[in-house]
Amino acid sequence: MRISRCDTCRTIVPFDAQTCAGCGSPLGYLPDRCVVRTLDTTDDPAVFLVRGERHALWRCMNAAWGCNWMVPADAGEIWCRACRLTRNRPDAERTDAMSAWMIAESAKRRLVHQLDSLALPIEARSDGAPDGLAFDLVHLGAGDDAIGMATTGHAGGIVTLDLTESDDLHRAVVREQMAEHYRTVIGHLRHEIGHHFWNRLVGQSDHLAQFRKLFGDERANYAEALAAHHDRRSLGWDDQVFVTAYASAHPLEDWAETFAHYLHILDVVTTAESFATLDDGEPSPDPASWGLDIAAFELGDLLARFRPINASLTELAACVGAPPPYPFDPTGRVVTKLEFVHRRVAAHADRDRFYASN
Ligand SMILES: [Zn+2]
Ligand SMILES: [Zn+2]
Ligand SMILES: [Zn+2]
Image 1: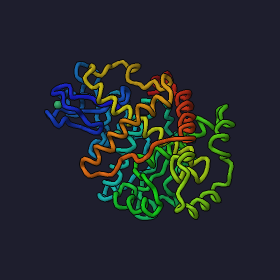
Image 2: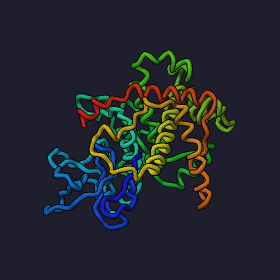
Image 3: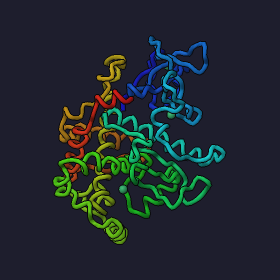
Image 4: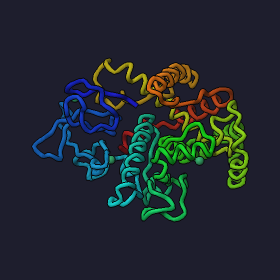
C-alpha cells in the first residue's frame, strides 16, 4: 500500500489512522485516490475537507468501529466503499464479537485498497449483479450471528469468514494442527477473493487450457480431493510445485493460494518501496498517478525486488523476537504459477471502468 505523511506535521500515518499521532489532525482514507490524507474540520462537525480542496466528505458510518474511509457528502451513502461490501456482521450488543469483527474489517479494507490500486474491478452484490461480491463476517457455529452451516470460504461471490479466525490463540492452535507455516486473517481474505476472481480471470478467459496445464484440471472431484488432502497433510508438500501444502489439495485451492501469495508479495514490495519514496513529493490528486501499473513489470522483477525486502522483514522481526512474518521463498514451478496469476491480473485490470463506477 502507499504510505503517506501528515500534511500538518509530516508524521508518517498508518493506513488505518483516523487521527495523526504527531499533531492530532484528523485523517481519512480517500477510496478514489487510494491514500490517507490530512483533513480540515468545518463548522459542521460531521463534514471534513481535504486540505486545500472544497469537496465535502463524511466519515463512514463505521468510524466508531475503526473505519477511517471517507464518503463524499453528496453521494447519498452512509457507509464507505469497503464497508458497503459487508452483508452480515455481528450484533453490536456483543462486544467480544464486535472486536473480532473490527479486526476482520481492518484486513478487508487492506484487501479492497489493494484490489483498487490494481484496478481489479469489484462488483458489489446487488439485484443486477447476483454473483457480485459480498462479505459475511460472522461467528460460525456459535452465537446469534451464526448463519446456517457455512464455513470460511467462497461461494458465488459471497466471502464468508469465521470471526474465530480473528483470535490469535485460535489461529496458532489450528496452524499447529494443520502443520501450516502461515495463517492470518488477511491471508484468508486474499485466498477467498482468489476463488472469486478465478472465474473472471481464468474460467471465462482463453487461458483455461493453460491453467489446466499448470495447476491441473479444476473439474476434479472437490470433496474427494479435500478428504485425501486431510489424510496426507502430515507428510509435507513439494514446495517446488505448490506454494503451500493446502495448495496441493485441488487445482482451485492451488490457484487461490497462489493468488493470495501473489497479493502478499506485491503488498510487501509496494509498501516497502512506498516508504523509500515517501519524500519524493505530495500525494497527487490525479487518480492516474496512484495506481500500480503491474503490466509494466515482469514477475521476475517483482521477485527480485521482494527477496531482499523479505530478508529485512525477517531480520527486523528477529530484532524484536518475532517469528519470520513471511516464511516462504517461491521457487521452481511456483514461480511459473505466480507468473500466470500476474499476467491474468494485469490483463484484467480495467482502470477506465474503475474510475467510471467509483
Ligand atoms: Zn500530524
Ligand atoms: Zn467504512
Ligand atoms: Zn479455498
